Image (cartoon, rainbow, N blue to C red; front, side):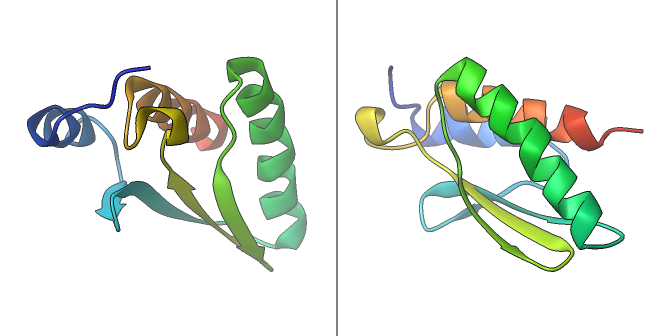
Length: 94
């Protein structure tokens, strides 16, 4: 997996809603109605992440799920991170 350079990351980032860079990782905070909805999101994303063999760094408190994505084997952000970010967004899309 190839690490994307800064211009590639910025270009890809413009295509995502609500994602930003935080300490060299893709970052987004998802907010839900309650804990049950947040946990349901995590369950759906866990299946997706496992299928993609790419697992997020995430943290859940009540109705919030904070996510950081990076590809450790690439030494930074790769297309794999953007693919999972788009997948996460599709899970919460209306």
